[in-house]
Length: 241
Image (cartoon, rainbow, N blue to C red; front, side):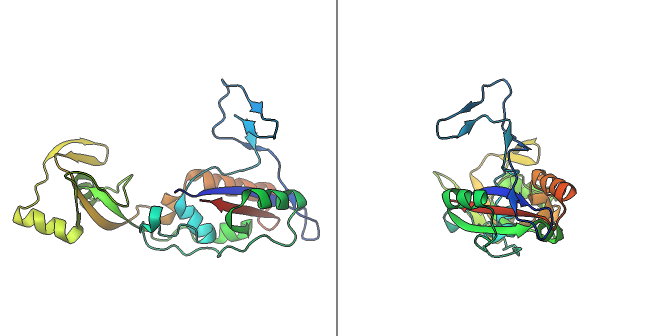
């Protein structure tokens, strides 16, 4: 089962002023202007142009940074890489949460509720090495050996005729001829091979942790800092799995 984040923003005019939740001022990334926007009787909006949530991504590395959620683990606990140092463990909700935000948190945050000052997010070291773990097709693994990072991979592979080797087993099989990889054609960074051969391995993410986080996140946090300042803006969020 996947994990999603629900994230909102609170701001204040100064340290002596109360926090207020920002409204629907963020462009909704999935808005389709050619389709009608509707609102259900319960208030749910279909195809809204704007949202009160500034981030709509689904990035487990980011979740690990924010609150140690899905940190190096994927579906069913499968290892996806080395653990990432989080900014903080889940803190729960702050005592001075705005009434509007508290109501939302009670209704929409299912686990690992937390909050972070924007300053903490901006000061975090995003430029650190990132080690991924996964199962690659043999062609992807051969490309990785030439320095080409895979763009996608699995935590496990099964099915008729498929075999997954460790990197050591795979290299030994190539050396003694028990594993034969026949390259047919290339497409992007993937070499397609006539085999159901897979390799379970680790590799350094090109560009480090920053490269594994979607650009939307950095644009959003930078924009909030410019608009409200890092010390009068905080992110309030929770997760659903």
